[in-house]
Length: 520
Image (cartoon, rainbow, N blue to C red; front, side):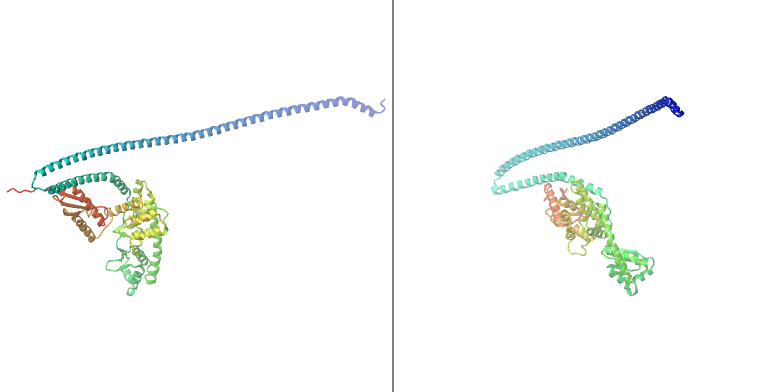
């Protein structure tokens, strides 16, 4: 059947290879199944791990969100708490303000009630005095009727004279009482404001003289300053406008001039010439021009320093420069720049106490004497010159009015102008702030005594305390206690109208009655 060995071999292989192949295939399938199971388990484990990681991430995210929500809630709660605390403080402040207003209203009500009681008492007193006058009139009429030697017209005149004197006496007493009440109520707060402003303002005053002394390293320099035939000294005086006095004073020369600014330029120029050693007309002109230019820059720095000290900003550069010039300007021995700074401080402090614009008051006070920076070279009073300056550089209308009205040359338009007037008077009348010549001082005292003695009933008058008080002696027969008050007021008004003086003058009227008899 099988003729060929190869066929037999093929048959054997086929018979044996079928089961083997099947077994091999079975083994391979089992391996693939095991591998698939292991892959499935690995995938499942990885899935479980990934699920666990996702779970942890979600938990972390949830915790982060919870922390964020908690922080946001706490911040919102803190914000609301602060808002509630602010509202509570506002309510407490409002309650305190209302309580204060309530107390003020109660105090005002008590004062009004007291004033009503006082007026009622005064009305009763007037009624009583009217009844007394009526009774006295009836008694006088009856007495006149009994006197046959006096005519009706004479009796009527005597009665009129008696009633007029009594009415004048009572009117003078009432005027004195009202004036005293007004002085206590109206001046008390003003006095406190002024005293506070003075106490809080402490500004030093510098006093300049009309000469400056320049020290020399040796006596030989004097000859070089004079120069051949005096050409150096003439060139120096022509360039600076200041006179050089070369005398026997050892190692010094004197610069004399009424313009402190020119004198300062001359002093600096001369010191530089001495230090340089080259002194001749050409060098003198060069140095003086250079110092003039430097002085302009220094004036701006001085003006800016004054503005910074007072707290005034935004001034025009030219006004700042003019303020710097006031450093070298004196009035009655008082440095004008320091005076202006002090007036600015005082006006600002008083404005703040009165709840006005303190910054504008300081600005007006600082500029009130700005005209004195150029009044040596310009015609007109320093108030009109100052007004033109502040107008030129577009200052506020209230500042313009304060500059023009601080000596009452024009009518004031703002309370700040009045404060500048008051501050100017305070600064000028402060003891030691100003000096005046002996002749002017004596004339002012004599004029003060003349004004007092010009009134009827005045026997003598004495100006004391450097003219800050006038004591008036009156004749007791002509001036009674009531009219003495009127006399003091009239004298004060006449002094205020006819005289110029720093500060204020106290008028004291003294009435003395003496009874004299002799034992024989």
